[in-house]
Image 1 (cartoon, rainbow, N blue to C red):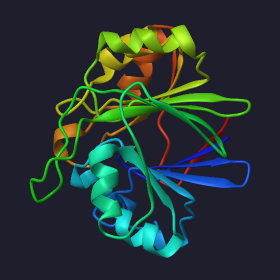
Image 2 (image 1 turned 90 degrees about the vertical axis):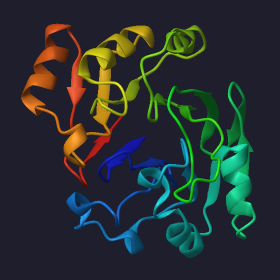
Image 3 (image 1 turned 135 degrees about the vertical axis):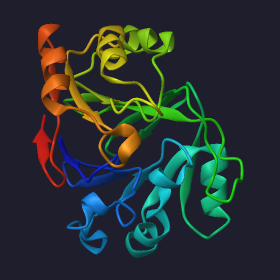
Image 4 (image 1 turned 90 degrees about the horizontal axis):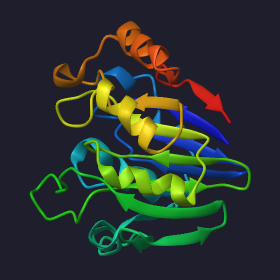
Length: 225
């Protein structure tokens, strides 16, 4: 499993020859100006919620690639009405896709489209691949629901928001890693704009002091599990 960070909360995940894109927000992110969305591969697009900083480039990429959009019922219905292919899910449900099992789990946040239209309830994803399991938290506060995850799934990586203000900050993300019983963390949803700028060295130090590994990838950088 190869995971590429495209800035903010946008991830590319490659499992064998399948390409999964999560929350594509690239053209609106000045820090990701070097990323060409025309070059991004996507067989599936996973959306945690409907805020613009998570869906901005969905239509352009899905139109070019024919990707299947996976999200909550309301978001998928929105895109199906626009002519895109989608697979609707809801909290607690899971589905076996060609690349592995996906479960849609709780997140505490809000969810609306840029025009104010209701975007269903926000969520996160657990992806169980053939060899590795990951948790993509989405935009969320710390929640006790996270403690349910290791009862079913042993994680190899937890992808957690750490920018604070709109989501968990570093300290709560450390607690979240305890809740999901995974000490290997990829941080995201930070630095894109002023409200969520963080001190990278301090964040890594705080995780290290708790015997945890926080990875902060540069835009375009990847990690392999």
